[in-house]
Amino acid sequence: MKVSVIGGGGRVGSNALFALQLAGIVKELAVIDVNLDMAAGEALDLRHGSAYVASQKITSGGIEQAAGSDIVVITAGLRRKPDESRLDLINRNVGLFRGIIQDLKKVIDHNTIILVVSNPVDILTYLAVKEIGLPSNQVIGLGTTLDTLRFRSFLAEYFNVSALDVKALVLGEHGDSMIAAWSSATINGVAMSSFRGYDKAKVDEIFDRTKKSGAEMIKLKGGAGYGVGIAIAEVVHAIALDRQSVLPVSSLMSGQCGMSDVCISLPTIIGRKGVECVIDPQLPEDEAAGLKASGDALKAMLSQVSF
Image (tube, helix red, strand yellow):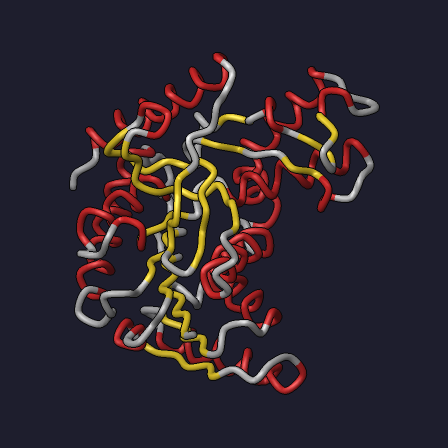
């Protein structure tokens, strides 16, 4: 299986490539970046470590290098300028992203799966669905997968348990309106609300920190890298191994939770075809209302974007 990472010379793309190399599951990695020297350098660095990790073909180049890819991961994006509004940044990223999509259409196969990581991920996933010319199940946004990982790690730290035992989902927009699905949160099957040390105020603080983690990472080290690289690798491996994994990714809604014509994160079965099934969770009234508000917020944003 060949996986191409557009923006592979950047922090997010390079960390995703490293995570994919360490796992050794996919057989070919392509580092794609507008900065060809950076792409070549990242590919060379990965090749230097390959003898101790896995037998993989590692190449680099421009977007033409994506030809023959089973999965294309798009991480390229622009950062906010001083005093720039969020909407202005969104419109600039839409312009960049549309160019990538148009170039990709010339080289990808009909069965290629697109994984959108660039922000605003829900908006750009929607744009990809509308313009890439592939079935909507083959276009996936990373969505709240990273938020869910952050959430689980913070909860594990608070309860002093293994992070692998924490099962809790963040759903909705990858942004300010995301919600915590507290009603289904467990620690190895035990309802979180009945676990030792549970305190609603404290776990609410943990979710608030989760929502602000992106800004925290920018302040501390300039942006996320390792965590998002692992999140990307988890989705890629679910596709590559046809795992039928349930992950909170962003995809086009067709009536789930009363939402349509918007890309948003719900629990989703991911396998070799991409989105195999979007689960329509039965949520309590407050969580359902929060999810609807998140969908409404995304639709309002879509109405302001210059597509």
